[in-house]
Amino acid sequence: MHVLVAGGGGFIGSHLVDVLLARGDSVVVVDNFLTGRRSNIAHLDGHSGFALIEHDITTPLPATITDGTTFDAVLDLASPASPRDFANLPLEILAVGSTGTRALLELCRVHGARFFLASTSEVYGDPLVHPQPETYWGNVSCIGPRSCYDEAKRFSEALTMAYHRTHGVDVRIVRIFNTYGERMPPDDGRVANSFVLQALQGEPITLHGDGRQTRSFCHVADEVAGLVSVLDGPHLGPFNVGNPDELTMAELAALVVELTGSASPIVTVELPPEREGDPAQRRPDITLVRDAYGWAPSITLRDGLARMVAWFRDVEGIG
Ligand code: NAD
Image (tube, rainbow, N blue to C red; front, side, top):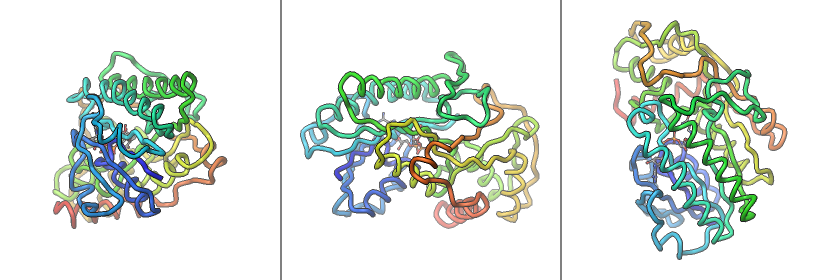
């Protein structure tokens, strides 16, 4: 397949690109490196199946993309995704989830390509149903600090379905739940990487509130395998793709201390303003994707975190 990956210079996108190249696809990454890092794809320089086009997809796509070889699939992973980005890049997030996604859908219409949207568990907002199945419509504030991201992704999903219904574009939608692992930026404020960074630097590990809020974390290798099964499969979705194993943030902090051998104390702090509206619980119901494709995560949090700790130490040079 000839594949365009928007956001392929990012954390999840770069792992996905590796998997697609490894199976013989040719891949064009389009990324403006707003939140991604060149180092994520530096190892692909000179790969015969790989090309990088540095471009902001909220501005008209260059002729190298629109008039080049027809794409079989276009994957939309281009969006800032961390709570820190919600505070610093709200307009960029809204633009990429609307104008950017539309540009990629339009490309699919013209090329007859399959469109793949990386949506998010955030479409469920602060969920009143637990765990969240795809049939749950969510509990989302349209004006809160997270609204730029939640509503942009909900709009992207709506736009995707409108292109499907109006123009017959072949589409796939996945809702990604918290993903962690190698190449995650250490300092973007997400919880797993923040704890590892604090532990490796010997800083206090800061639990927000009482630390009893829960999350479930999927290692990026598992996550990408799930994304590829949805990309290749016959069903539109949306599919939840994430790890249903849930733990409290206090348990996560303790596990990070154990794995790093850190002397960092675990302290509790007030919820910072940008975390207002943080869901208290988040856990995917993955029945649909498991039944359709036999996908389920296989990497334990202990093993996955150990890989991330090693990456932060050996590649990022932390601690
Ligand atoms: P990331 O920030 O590492 O990757 C996003 C990439 O998109 C970056 O390389 C960034 O530079 C690029 N980008 C942003 N705006 C762009 C624009 N206008 N034009 C071109 N490129 C642009 O984030 P990630 O964690 O890898 O997330 C990838 C996708 O998965 C996002 O769509 C995100 O919403 C979704 N997602 C991620 C998680 C998670 O836990 N990491 C959870 C749910 C959903």
